[in-house]
Image (tube, rainbow, N blue to C red; front, side):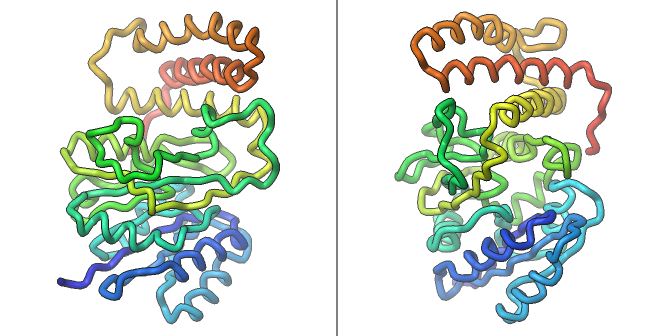
Length: 314
């Protein structure tokens, strides 16, 4: 069998200490003998010790860790820079604020060897503080957490485990060269909540007819910092999510009934939110009550996105 190489791309911004442990977790991961890998860290204008951390890791790993600089602010720019600068058979994506499980590389390798075009896995929480009483797993999306169970599930069978995580995903290079990289107008920006770059990429994967799989062994542990465990953060996140989804709807409109450009099913869901919120409150269901409130913040952001004159950089 011909050698296979995974290019792991990590976009980073001012997280030198977290980056160090993220990279080390990959370096220490188990792997098949015929599997080679390189970790490319793309520095997106960090002002801390990121270059020094990467230089030290590169020396310790005998060149398995590389440093790139991307001056255009935004995670999508940084990831695309990493894709363009690498050449391995598989492109894998990881975040700088998480650690990868010991089987991470082996799980990616096996899924692609088994014939899948892309693979994604669980993102488990590494909680800095105790979970608040208004939170439960219904709200996990805000924290980029996901667990689809302990069984491998091909996409196309169980839709509950569909999706693609830019913090825990891998794609054949031949596929990403055909569908293109991330949309530069979407994704994280310094000091701003912007998102949905992964979802937009996933839409193109599905439309291209590519086969994906949820692989439970491909697990990562994502830091959940205390500053994100506030109701105000969740509200801001949902409003930004609605805004980003409005842009997705502009790029990839669904053939659904609309009212003033807004899908009618979203309007119906919003109308149903208030009685559901009251019902949850009467049951003493604090997370359920907050979940319904967040639906309203999402809709506010979605309408704002539809009314905005902002254009996407394609």
